[in-house]
Image (cartoon, rainbow, N blue to C red; front, top):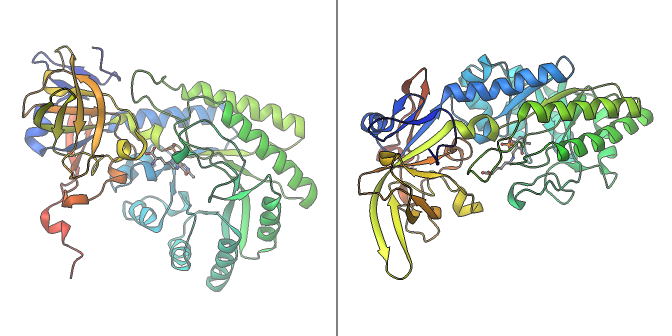
Length: 434
Ligand code: LLP
């Protein structure tokens, strides 16, 4: 089937899409639409690609950390934990979610460009394993707060390596001119390390940098490793500080449409490791433990969003529109980044995809679109429309604009679906209002 991007998506005899062994009609009948469907088995497979490659190619003690910003809800954390990953949390809210789900605090890495004093206190009180310190002010605040609490806090320093991995501007965070971290190129990262080494209540263990997202090849990561190694070797010579960890951040891309390649995680990690080992030999720097922070590549291709088609309208001389019962409120990525998706008529997945249309959402906003000028099997009102590869940055970025309620989410495992997030109610919409 042309539009099936992944092996767990099949079509049954009635011509309907089947996700991880479950017919979309059954999902829609039991849980309603719009519905986020997350294939837990696929999430686990993706986790294993990282755990096995990193154990094979990197030093002992290396570990993938799941970047919860891609998809954060209680139910994901036991899966991540049982697969042996740590987790990157970018706010106290994400940390809270992981902790209430029983995720071990010592396996959390606390990110955030602007951690407030309250955030810092929360992180320290929760026993979070590592802080990833973004800037000098945060360093001073953390040192002070940790001192008051009698804690010596383990930390990594976030540095910027100044790379442009040719991804979307909006998701490229490794450039020198960015609000994230402290640049190596300008010499400021050296001052940052010096200050951290002088801070009595901070135990610096290494460096973090993140170069971007939706990256398809290892080249940029190899360049990142070179820059980090050069910096770390210099710091070892000048200050006798040997970084135990390099955290390379997240970034491996996924296949949204057939035009995107399937990223070979194992092969890419092998290339990075070969590059690292050669660099260590060249510079005499002892091989560091490697941390990586995959978000998208863990959850994106495990997700499918199901909608019900409503209006199907022709604007004569222009184009055909199919409106669905969700849209930018559950997936703002097209509105924000013009991100492309694979869309299919899940009720007629065996019919030829020959109807060119634009999929629009239900908001009173002309930018509320999911895909433009794509081809699906001609729908009727009531047909189920599936958008593939929506596991990352969809629920996480969802909103209540126009007071549209957030969809429910089900997780599928072993051919069975279970509700993991209930659909928001109207009461939820006013629950904070006094
Ligand atoms: N670590 C750090 C420090 C990050 O900033 C990010 C993503 C990740 C890890 C995870 O990267 P991933 O493996 O998911 O590429 N909302 C955008 C993506 C923004 C990503 C920002 N940082 C989108 O929908 O494409």
